[in-house]
Image (spheres, rainbow, N blue to C red):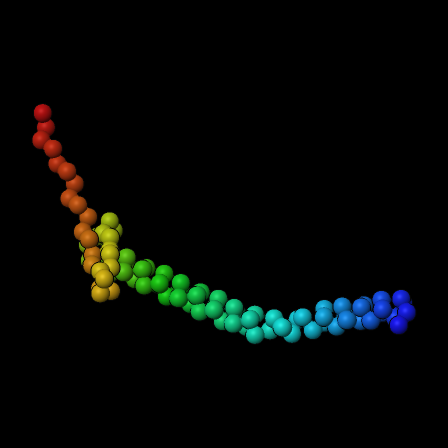
Length: 89
C-alpha cells in the first residue's frame, strides 16, 4: 500500500469510530436519565413530607413549632418555649 492509501484508510477508520461512538453511550445515558428522574422524585417527596410535617405542627402548636423524626420514622412536634418572664427590679 502506498502512503495515500494508508492515510485514506486511517481517515476512514477514524470516521467510523466517530460515527459509531454515539451508539456506545445509549444505555448509559438512558440509565442516567432514569436515575436522575428517580432522585428528583425522591427529593420532591421528601420536600412535601417536610412541608406537611411543618404545617401540621404549626397548626397544632403555633407558627413557631418545630418537628423532628425519630429513628422509627415517626414525627414529633416540638412546642415553642414559653417566653422568659423576669421579675422587675
